[in-house]
Length: 92
Image (tube, rainbow, N blue to C red):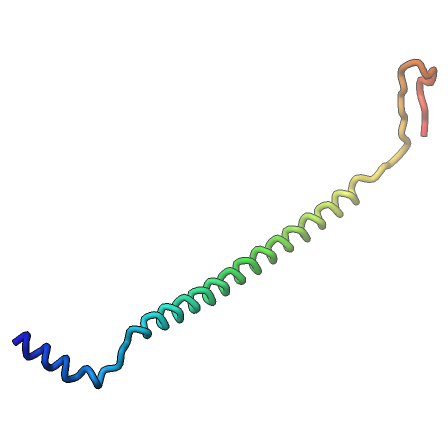
């Protein structure tokens, strides 16, 4: 029986092309597809990160502007100096 299968394979060999190079081509195609898909995911992740950091930067700047607006000097300032200068109180 196995002899019959071997004869059949030998008889069909001229009709079956050599497929040794196909595996290398398939591997290259899969590798290229993997690189393209991973670059798309990396771009999406970086875009999301940059967008969120930009929003955080705007929030921080708005908070600082609000804080700067509330820290205003009202009234006079009195500075007291002690030491050898001789001045005890300076009023601005």
